[in-house]
Image (cartoon, rainbow, N blue to C red; front, side, top):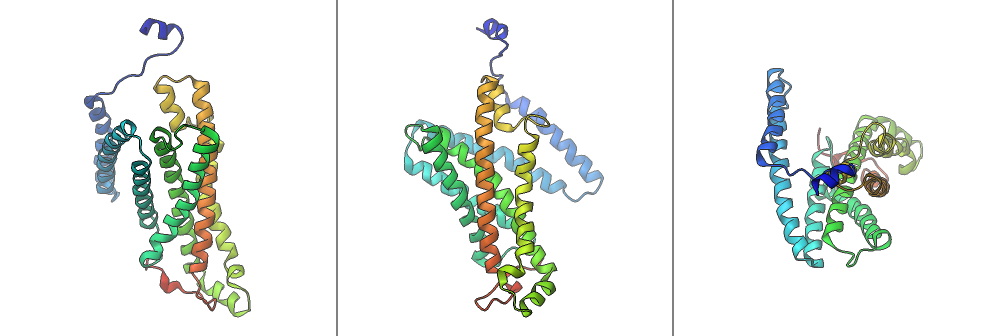
Length: 275
């Protein structure tokens, strides 16, 4: 079988051992040592992130193994909820001036729920048409990719929006005093925020296949899938991610922009945490 695979140009998937992973981890340790030597101030964050990556991915691998063996909509829904809540926390943590209290958490979480869940369900029901449509083999990885990219887009957009509102507060208040509505006074900064949130996915689509081979496509090829089929899935994923990121960013910026003003259309920067 191995000889046949080689003759067709395809090799069987290489199974990684714990030693292989440990060797790769040494590269991160080396980077951390260099970072410490250069006093960059990110050594601890780098090591913590590496440990979190290993632990979290190992745990999710065990959870997915159980889900694949016991397909049930309740468990898939619970897993999706946990992913959404974790993503909402990360959105808030990546902003320099997030909204105070539950609002800072709710804006990003609700926007991701509207966009990522809607696009994921649309893809599962209309495009993939898998039976059952909530099969964790497709639902969880697809939702994870959408949430991850939408989370980044929303975090960047919200950070740009709140920072611009803080830095340009005098200009915004002057426009309000001249009689402009709140949405007109902040529309320039709102457009800039949306643009910032969409730049990463636009760059990813523009560079796909030329500068980089996207992760899902690379993973399928390494697992032995034919490149043409892997490309089809990657195109689908890129389009879904762009739609989810765009819709989520637009929703978050729209909601966040309104929360910057009170019912009398006054700028309320006291709703933001200090940077």
